[in-house]
Amino acid sequence: MEKKIAVILGDGIGPEVTQQSIKVLNAIGHRFGHVFHYSYGLMGADAIDKTGNPLPDETIATCLQSDAILFGAIGHPKYDNDPTAKVRPEQGLLKLRKELQLFANIRPINTYHALHHLSPLKSKQLKNVDFVIYRELTGGIYFGKKELSEDQSTATDECTYSRSEIERVAHLAFQHAQKRKKKLTLVDKANVLETSRLWRKVVQEIATQYSDVTVDYMFVDNAAMQIIQFPAHFDVVLTENMFGDIISDEASVLSGSLGLLPSASVGNKTALFEPIHGSYPQAAGKDIANPLGSILSAAMMLDYFQLTDEAAAVREAVSWTLAHGFVTKDIDAINNYATTAVGDLITDHIERNANGDRRSSNASLNQSTII
Image (cartoon, rainbow, N blue to C red; front, side, top):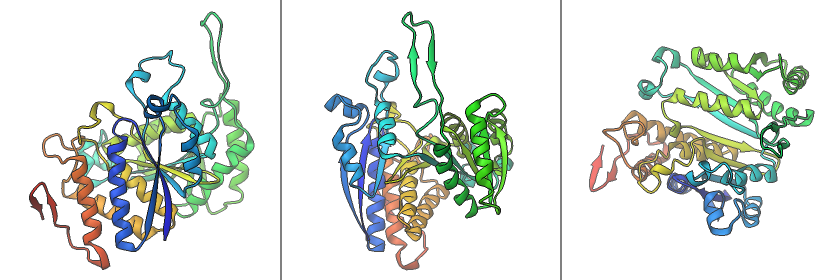
């Protein structure tokens, strides 16, 4: 198989972690006989510095000509700390979602037994945690009309949703629920918000088409509590843009590190894959960032290409590094490995476990051998 992949390295640690994912994809290609062609584009603070535009037209064209997009991270302190900035890195990502109609963000939430001690929750609460959040991505308050009064004393952010926007992401969530535990939870605020009442009405109508899926409804404040108290009770979570942004970040702490979690943004034409963490500029260039969120996002890309065995090989290699303590500084502050070293270990594990050989990897690392 041959696939064209658009690569947007982005800001901060984005280039470092994405380069590890490319190494892993190349190892998958070598092991399974695939060829991945990469084309690079600019977005974010890097694009502003080089072109004055957070999303150049050339990047959009590159993405539209590709089978999928691998993205690093976005953001820079000089914009985060300047609320008056007219051009901001985040504008590039929001525009890209709109241009490519990436209307659904998918975030799997998993935990690893070896890392339970890093989570703020007790180990017993983390047992069997495995759920997926489907967040609507191109509507709601983030894309609504924004106004600031002339005297700058009153501000307005409009939240608008249409039936069609809700339907398309809801169908994806229901279809995924059918492949899992057949349970879907709609998270809204239907007791006070008109948009949430529309969400609930539309989802109730759609639910009749998926009679094998059990649906429950939860207000967002209750959902925020339940994710902490009973995270294993969730299967597929469906919600609107802002609520999804907040609860998916909340859920990410269950794993013990933001650097572990991947995501996919899918639409009508293509899909974008990125780790959920930010640009972490303090770590940029130091070779200490956790590449696993990006590498697991590449695994989601392989699933998108219907290369399920290949995706499983990536996840197996990631699990192997975690189980054996080959982790970055965010996971172990004392005994840790560099970003590039973790990428090399995963790449080596994939290549050495070809043809069904499941033995532990032997990897050369800085003139020494890890058994």
